[in-house]
Image (cartoon, rainbow, N blue to C red; front, side, top):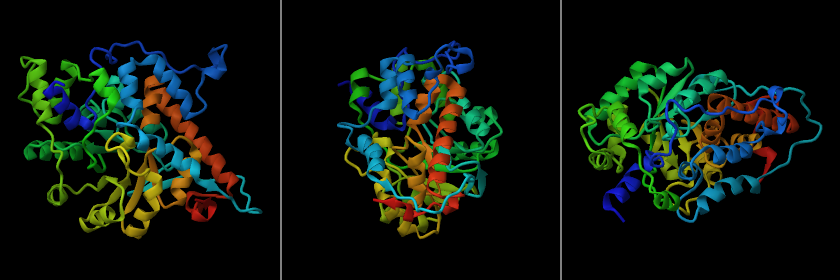
Length: 398
């Protein structure tokens, strides 16, 4: 295997991949979701998260679709993220009926309409011309938070200007600390309200190797310039940019980095990639503000536990000292309720967002949020929960 290509796959597991010459361009005339008011086939309108998968598959090149949809190696963790929710049974109390429910909650002091956030997903611009900009607008319409990846292929100022809704920046850390420092300062100045640092890095996905994912030169150059490597120009060859990119990121973060970051910004900091009680306590000891229980959607080391299976351990270890979110395997509103019952403040959706974006742009992401909202409302009413605060572990049989 080409050494530079493999190095890019390993280092840029942060998500800087797209199929060569197969991604969306800014001038794509992308079909939107079917509207039953203007269609003879109302069933084409997605009614579940799974419906978006089939639509995304027809609208994306195979390599781009597999980049989003597949997991690491044998995909044990990818499958288990979903199946673990199915193993949890709900046993609602009798004679405790409610007719309405309030889904609103707060995350890091920000009031949102429901406990579902958009997770950071890399390379969204390769799935739809508007990419993370469309996601940010959809999140604002739904009155929730968009956590934007620094590898989404749009700059922080572009993302900030896309909507007035609350946004977090998920940070893949430039190896050059001066570049990282400026990026954090830019995010703070642009109005982002939190920094999410993903620490479960490194990726090996068979589909990406077979499809030989690489970022087209123009997008890779813009991405690196947006991060802060402004000395790069289009005079560099594509291979020069790939080699520069492979060495540009710090994939060996440790506690010293978080001490440095904590001293750099007043923004809340969340640690994404926690799967154990010990790691959760480290986040507390570092003075961080939140944890995202996550195995990176089964895209990293295969064989790690499902996020929902370790959530209660993390909750017990933290004991309310910092807020806990989770991602991985959310496909139904009932899954959201199960995560809340086990102690999560809210959940984040990655693949459902990406599939919906590919299927219908901003309208698609708004639709998938509406679906999860409706399903969660139904699950909570059926379980006798008049508010998010009323959801607790007594509802579950694990």
